[in-house]
Length: 403
Image (cartoon, rainbow, N blue to C red; front, side, top):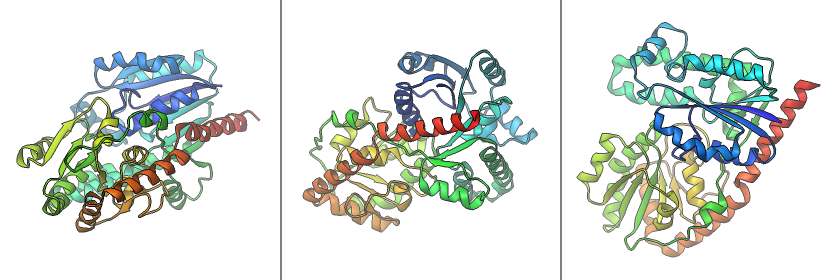
């Protein structure tokens, strides 16, 4: 089967959840099918990573979008067209024409599009299109806008208009695609509630490269270490770190004075960077070369996530690395593990701190929970198993459109 895939990022290096997902699925898909990848980049330097993807793709083409999302061109298009900002920042004038030429010149069986906001780049075609929603975008923007507008009410009309556009176009492309894929059962059920007419919704979960993470063994730091992981282009991660540092960490530090907090992830904001200079118990690392060593040295991962949908890679990666996880209810969405056996769930600052303190003061509990969570993830979330679900969707979609 020949697959045409369109993504809003180059799936390498593995800095974001989307990159991790697409890279690992490409590795598995390429074992049985031929894939052409068209992807957006923000910097010319990203082209050096194309070679990392060539073993899995027959053809790769990249297209440059504006590096600064707040470029006047993106804002103007969002103001003057029916499209929301998240679409206009991912619209590249030459891309739609290039895709049309590619589809006309080659015999593809289906189109795979990551995220609804890439769909406007797809020309009219008779090829079946599979849309993968890694999260439900308009819900994330609604959460973010509600918090911002509490402090800056004058922004409310602007946010409301843009969110209305996101909601309209996201639902429009759910209906337009031949097959819709979500990453969790929760997301599928939500979409079925708001769009009852949609019947072809599949779940292809996020996963973890079990063998890759098992290559690095657990080796704790001498000082008790709490870890936070997340790329800070994603607004829920910024929100989570601010809550962690300002509400949770003082309580942990009071009970375990020697504890250290490591905040790991690319593109930290100025405010997040400042935490490291204000509090000597906090270290801001930015991007790291190998995330496995961060999990190996940490006593626990903390994930105070309050917005966004989908399965969190950092939770799965920590669990497969035998690193106990403390997080909010939403942090474990779609994982279906057992609270208090595979992780600790808490939704307030006091509860999160209490769970973290309990683990930091009990090494035997750390070991027990780490081993239980690793065994659970190895059985349920290997990329080989996840990819088999996607391949089934491919086969059913291609077959149903050729009968």
